[in-house]
Length: 284
Image (cartoon, rainbow, N blue to C red; front, top):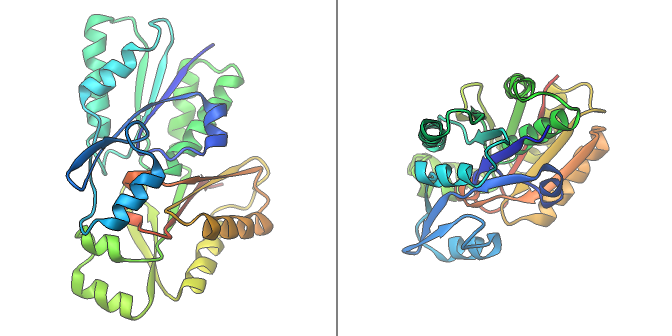
């Protein structure tokens, strides 16, 4: 049975995985230096990173509109069920807009099968869920079985962040400027994670870059004991060499079935800042 997977522009999907997943993307909007861009459509990652570095203000983003989602749904053959995995509802209006669009379409075509799922995560967290969904589809699972499986996997999704700089959090008002300045002076790095409610929370503050990376990698073993059937995905903000080094360390310590690497899209990189890393995997 063919099921069309969809995601919004907050999903950071490795190119190698994108070829496997066959995901239709609904872009986010990004505003930087007075111009509007659609993620992955009217700007590429390299250009965005450069504009972010040159700008004195952080980019702003907005969710795809209900009409954006509606038009994306309409492009899919009416006989093909759709599963749309959205950025966490607690981080954006994306989920609500995707639901509104679904209801718009069902008023016209009540027999359509569309499921909009709140992923409760972001970046590569959405990608590991898409990977799990694709595996179920390939195994011949029904539409409802795939939907049920995704909801089960959302409870197991673990998304971890480590930030090399606090500059973007300070600029974005996510970290008090005085406390942020003190933290920078003390060379404090933040370890963060996606909560069960779909928010992003600080879990630890670690002094020094090397210590923060060691702790970042160490956390994986606190959540997973069996790795053979699991994948891990990592995204980075303008720091490919750093990311490859850390991912190699992870692979040396933990025997994941596969590891994927990609650049962060505009949404995640706006708050992570240069050198930020995100990993996602399923807990036992």
